[in-house]
Length: 613
Image 1 (cartoon, rainbow, N blue to C red):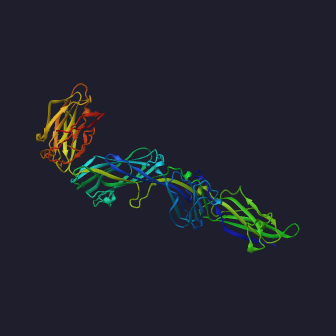
Image 2 (cartoon, helix red, strand yellow; image 1 turned 90 degrees about the vertical axis):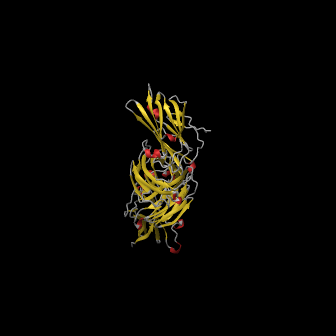
């Protein structure tokens, strides 16, 4: 008499535990270690000083397979946390995700060990993911600066109110090589704003963008949400930082403000939202996630045949074997262990397959290595056929362990900006500029060479603000081995000159310093630096000082590229013929000002002032 019985068909354990170096590049089970940066900064005319507020770690477990037979069960992720200020916490999930929790130790069958915590997901369906998170102590992270360095400067330091003005913004981005040497993708969205709730100031009556250009990528100007004007937002996209080169974005801001304060005030005019990502992290992914285990859809069948006659003619001879089949659609498996055994089944109501007193002698077999290295989806594997003797009815059992092949698992790591529900990115740079509601003085120096070797010098002083200035001092330095031709210095519109004088200076490159005390200038000059604008000179908005220099012996014309200006709130002049803007409080009468004591450092100058009595 012969019987063939397929006794058991059940879901069996699929194990996946391996290091990152052995993982594949496009496996359907994707585990991503991600670090997100929250960074803020303020841009002024002198640059940006960003602050890394926090770095948050995310562990993303994603079953990207699409077939229901690729459902994963008992997914375990080992997590090690170093320098963290928060514990591991559940963050979000999507799809079929059941029974997720955080454990202090893993199930013994996983073989995992050495973790601070273990993420366990009972069921992770296809097209389903779950995220856990924790935060680092930024103050203790070496080189915890921003992965990219963003800087901004402006073509001017101050602008007047109550008139249409413009300035150029020079934004630069570069990779921070002390943080990463990976390629970094960057996008920038620039918003102008007069909304105080969105990094703006309500005194702005006009804000728009023009003359946008970039060294790489593409720029598009559009109508943003924070100003009623058109063309008040800009996108800079497709920026790839592949080395330590600097990429630049330039654009012009055209603006008008109703600000009426007497002193200069630094106010916001908008903000920049920075997006970045790169495939690397501060902490190594294999250190944070050293082990992964998952179970999936496999089928084990225990087969029994008998009884048959033994050599004595008794029907006590039984045969057993097991078959494993990969039921998944996308995952391949490696068998690591197969067990087959039989127990006494004469009392089915109390049957316990793990009761050693019921184990039938000679029926217990274990397969370890060697086993088939890979079972593709749909493939199966059979054990050998074993025999044992038993005079009653045996029950044959089988179980197994097996794991997803390494190239079906992908461990990824990347760094990105933290997400903001309001702006899209939590990397925000607030942009501010100083605005003056009274007067604003600009000085421009022209050095014009003549055919006879002399130089015509024009110093143009303009009040580009909206109100009358106080008395203004303009200064110049005469380089060594230069002399003023005929000792003739003219002030176009002589009524604007209050007094003048000169004195020696400590730097041996210069013969002397000359100053001109000018009467108050009316506001409204256009700021073009022209020495031929008769209308502005007639209206006392612009004063032009002229003289001619002649060099003898060995002389350096470049030393003449310096000029000074002294209203109440002055700035150090630049070493270029185009001088930055300076400003001060309005005054209808003479107010005490400080004189220049000219001392040169390098090719710049230091302005010191003394009170006139």
